[in-house]
Length: 312
Image: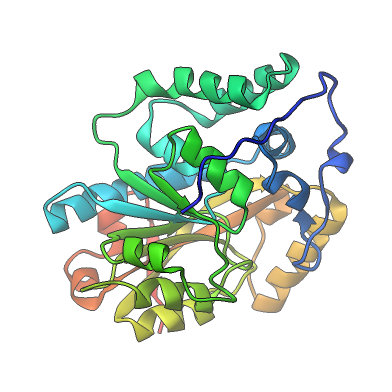
């Protein structure tokens, strides 16, 4: 479990060029935000992604809240959610509080201008969120390789607990494994491609009893089939919500846009009205036991889904 951290942070009041915050990523042709993902506080993260109109956390929070409510009905209690690749806890902040993503962007922009140190920023976060917790808030545990980001989210009270572990390369720690035993819903809004089947195999392998549901928003040019195959190994059937897709963020530059278009062409996917308009788009994948899929398909469960198909 990630302990509270005590790093300090100072912020320059002037706006930094976006090129200072991003570089080439490990996924060929995709911009990297590694320089802002693991800072002692979230200001640079929100600055970089806000300038690209990063909106997938808002879509994820709405979808995952709907699934959490359905899961609560199924298990007869408030569900426990694991947010994978949670970063600074954007999705649970939105899920569990009456606050919007634009408000979070404004909040951290103001904090940056005021040059708040880390302790002052944490206090500001608590003032923003504590009185706006939703009555139907759920327990959210976070997992991310970025220790500073997870630690900040825990200290701010956004995550109940957090773990800085890389399950692509190693088994979960005993503490994480114990926490995974009773997870009801695993969600990921932006990490597929950085994590894959190995992570999901280890997460589901730690479940004590029936497997949790899994919901993932994955960029359209990433092949989700290898992950779905691992989910099937644990008794889960994956539904691919084909329509609608969900905007993730604007492309950082022409090179990133062209790389995405090339990947889509290789997969035989049409970018019209989606990536061709300058945005990364993500598809939703929901994995549940077959009996539950047959009883209530994703189209009916979510309401927003227009078309869904089963992944073999």
